[in-house]
Length: 78
Image (cartoon, rainbow, N blue to C red; front, top):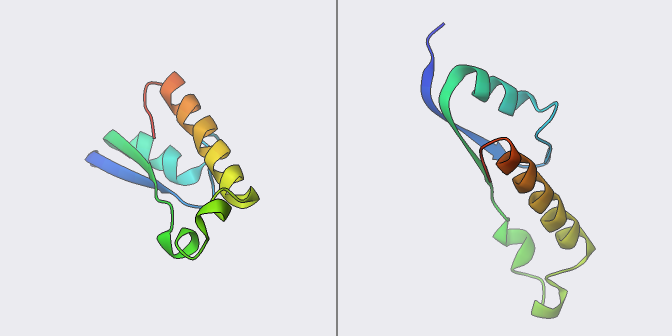
């Protein structure tokens, strides 16, 4: 099988680095893998500034910090 130079793994709903099919395949088939998460402005913009850290946003942010820390322990990052 031909090995890819670069791949992009876009974390959307599954914010795990373990048992993640997209990440697994990218790591197995690419020389370099870039991991990203994009906060959806359509969700955040309608919120008043004081509500931007509501529980779901806070949960996502904490999950992303955990994911980034684990990816860094493995030599990568988010």
